[in-house]
Image (cartoon, rainbow, N blue to C red; front, side):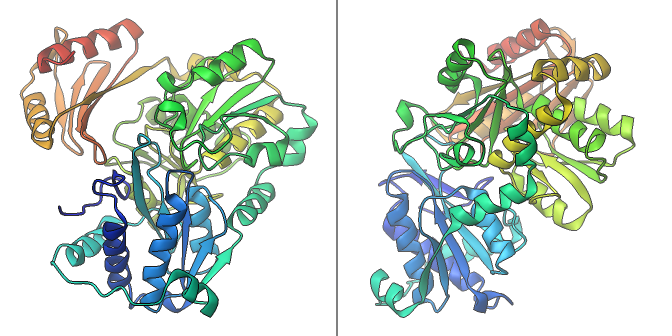
Length: 465
């Protein structure tokens, strides 16, 4: 089967399509695609997460690159995805490879590529790799073993975790947070962020051990997967709950009462903190499925707002080209010019803690203040699993023909990515996932019942339960 990159790398089910042989192919194709990269003599970095066989997959990939004549810096332990991005940029390397399937279910693994600037690799580069992959070339992987390449120095270990922690300690006001005596709960979701907030702040951590089954659920920081953290916050005595996904590039925030703060409000609060307290400037880039509250804030401060298709690679590309203060997507991925043109859940969680320490306010109060000024928006997303890709195409085509939803007229349509239906004071987006066999339906209105009504009606129109 053809190997294709989705919105963020290549992902597949372990032992089905994600095999050692396919990993060798994609690693070799990547090596060929960038063998003339101006920084290739400096080498590349390869990292991995806590998933089943991730370390072994990383060693396999590293060996292919080494046998192609590329020096490989292999992390000496599991790391977060933004660690690989930082190392690629700060060590002046050609690119970075991360073995991870991020928030996908436990049976998946994946191959992410990070560009030399420390962000997601763009579409043109990924297309180049796919072309080499699918030409049917019989690849020569070389004969040297992993241990032979390690002994010869073609593969060297790098202390990625230590480097990452030092960068965070330098960029975040750790002293201010500690002196504020904030009580912080961190849920690592069994992912590669485990141990970081405890090390830096002495935070209480849960689900902070290796568990390749992720406790029987996906390591995705969405409300349905957050009951352990919510229960701890409700029974404990904390100021904030911070949750990151499997490779710790995405974040979810819970307030002191255990209430889930959706990714739209998370984005908005960080934007306001950068503007009001850090006095920073720059444009704002948002994914196609993000909230209208961002538009309101940008209008208030006279900021240039860019909207791009879903996939952080589009945000990364723009952050490199333009003066962008912050870029974010709907699913909790946020990048900043003070750190990386890349998502980093740990960095963003620390910035939230810094925000609470600096403002000396409860998180729930900050949200109330923001909503009093910019309005209340009710945002929800439904993920509908499908049997094949043809269904995804069919449902989007069906959505294009809708004239009304829930009895309200569709007044405009936007096909930037999927099909967005614009209603008065509301919008609905129907989009196919780029990494899984499912359709996503997003909806935002100014009333919670209105949001539920529109989602219910479009599900009925699609004949899905």
